[in-house]
Amino acid sequence: MSARPLVALAASEEFVDGVPHVAVREVYVRALERVSGCAVAVVGGPAPDLAELLGRFDGVVFGGHQTDVEPARYGGPSRGGPADPARDELALRVLPAALRAGVPVLGICRGLQELNVALGGTLRDLPDDAHREDLSQPRDRQYRPVHEVHLSEGGLLRQLLGYPHVPVNSLHHQAIDRVAPDLRVEAVAADGVVEAGSAGDGFCLAVQWHPEWYAGTDPVSTAIFHEFGVAARLAAMRRDQGFPLPRPMSSIGMNS
Image (cartoon, rainbow, N blue to C red; front, side, top):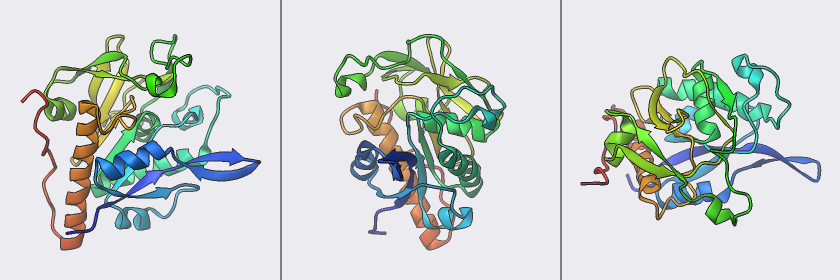
């Protein structure tokens, strides 16, 4: 197979001059193209037909955004914060379907929160600024690693990265509260905040931090995007050739 695998990147709704747009940050597209080796299609607005979406793509990616998952989606109290109902609908319909179909999934920041809610979990507001960016710094400095997370023994991330602890950046004001029954905790911060999770039998990994910003230079970020690319290529081969392929784990541990 010579063609790059095609992955769907979920967009969010933004308004420019009062006109709705579907938007993604370019840094996600660059990471998926240059590190994962994928072609990227931006998908936004109301959830498209699931059979068509998952039949055409070799992976799905749900990145971060300033909006929050609406609390009504997980039985939480109204917060009055910025929301994106179309993005919620897209995520909460597509993520469970992707897991059932074995389509590779990568979630980042909001993507982890969406995955947890889609599988029956809840979210909470964080009480302080421990996991928020320093807005006084230039944008590139805001996305540099600021704390460590502990990787669950035997988990996908621990196998992929080869270390019990890794440094990550942290730019979020919400986090997982009740972990969904089918979400496996992959990483936890020192204060107990769940920082990563996985689900299903195929490749489905979601992290609370932002590996896209330094995907080409930070070893942790590079490994995550590279492994997602491997999973997408295997999914493309499976779709093209009509037979199942094993779960990917091609990357060698970082300390090997």
